[in-house]
Length: 286
Image (cartoon, rainbow, N blue to C red):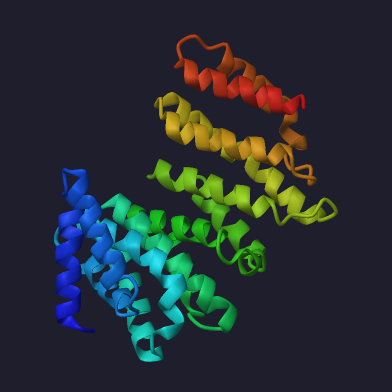
């Protein structure tokens, strides 16, 4: 890696991250696009910044920019550098303490996987994520399930081949004893798993139906803590399940309608939360 190139890039990202006027933002952005983001050298440089800079704002910005450049330049990076970068990002995402930066690094991982996995590279990635999900450390479990969830957006077919293992893993994570974040992210991942279940797959349908009560319990926790954002994400998943061909909610349909009526009529809850429950009822009737 060209250290001078990386140092200059880092200085520009610092200016951009803390810029307070439009002119500075425009000028710095133009310089980045014209002199740095057109060069494959920006990829290892951005990774180094996203994993080593002392300020989370710059790490997070570098991770966002890195994800954008991977699809353009990843194939131009030599094999040795690619392998070093894979190892560095996995170490960094486990060590990272800022949520936004962790999520940015997770998106980088899923973007690299989109290129690597079909070419039989980075074959230990999924096992690494399984290990994270089984870690005794809650933040590691959060990382593992978040990256697994994001992989459905880039290598969905590959993830679909792991359904049985994912069911077993998610059945544990959906009842995580420490982290509501793990539970909500697992619920979202299950929403993506659901898209791979065919109506005639009796085992898959039955397995998923068995997880629905735990999914509702996660939603109940979100409602009890007035966590509107997480509750909205949970309701979005339930709504999406209603339009799938596989009858994934049928076994618990009556309970779900009763639950939604109770939430919608509970005047102690925030109005937005009650509206979400009533919207779910509308979806059940369409």
